[in-house]
Image (cartoon, rainbow, N blue to C red; front, side):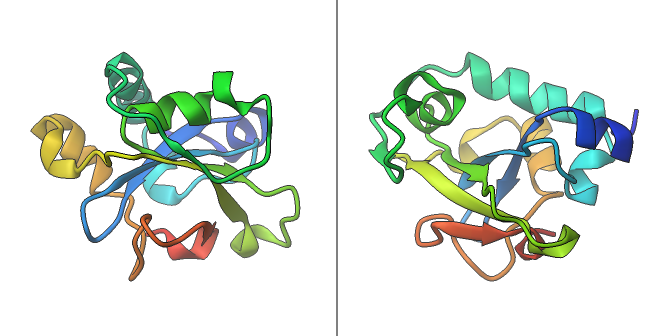
Length: 145
């Protein structure tokens, strides 16, 4: 089932992408538009979320934010599992200029080669263009295919 615009604007979705180096990142939507490659399937998005939530913590992440309460949140937990973790900025201008800022970076990044093929196939639909999560602390909506 497709995630409609109405649902995208009503719920804060967790979604995932991969960069050209194979690093995986976690994003929270803040009830804004999702990339088309994510919105195409609620079931695939849930499969990814369930998969990553069940992974064990493999590292202590580096904090990229000054949010003192964030250690118990989803960004911290995803980074402990090896995913760079981004939240949507409060200062978005138009649909194409959504900004996501990195909350945590994993000490030991999870690579697409580390996940089952079924998960990798879904992840490869949503790719950060011409950049890597290792160096990008700010990602723009238009940077994601």
